[in-house]
Image (cartoon, rainbow, N blue to C red):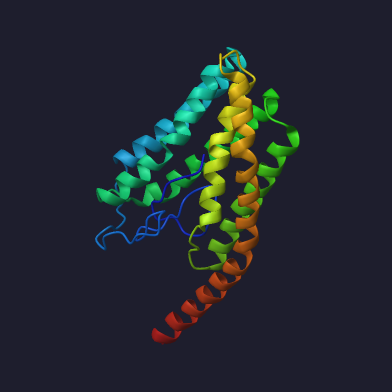
Length: 231
């Protein structure tokens, strides 16, 4: 579920800023970080491993009916989500494939994880639906803006904080319905992390609207300038 940055265009509150020149904390990255056509990079391998763990998550949750193990796996995948982006930026392993693979892995992890927990009934339906609807709208808007040529939009603090809260909450919701000894504590902690995370994610969505409009205007202006320059 969402936090890496390998240079993909457009926004994603459930994934970090994908800019190759800025980290998710807003600190400028070294100017030599450029993308390449390499396929077999460490970040890409990590993304593939994360994707390959999704069937394991469903197998643990539904075939084995082991909510505890599924919760631990989902928590581990979420906790290590930033690793591939960090390696890509700091070890010059940003790749064209990674720009696509990493956000796809983030989205798949989010939808498969939350969707599985929703089907399992370990999370209140209204809560999961509220999260999934927002994520679907943001994801669709991201694609549309990219097709329209909008500039990349930095992830806001609200988006990052909301993502973190939700990434913590869903494994805890699952653990709260498991046989783990601390399941009651997990259920309480899920709400402690989940409610603020949901609120912050919707605040980020609201603040994203003017940013998206500005990015679209600036992207169109860039295209007009480029066209005039090449005449």
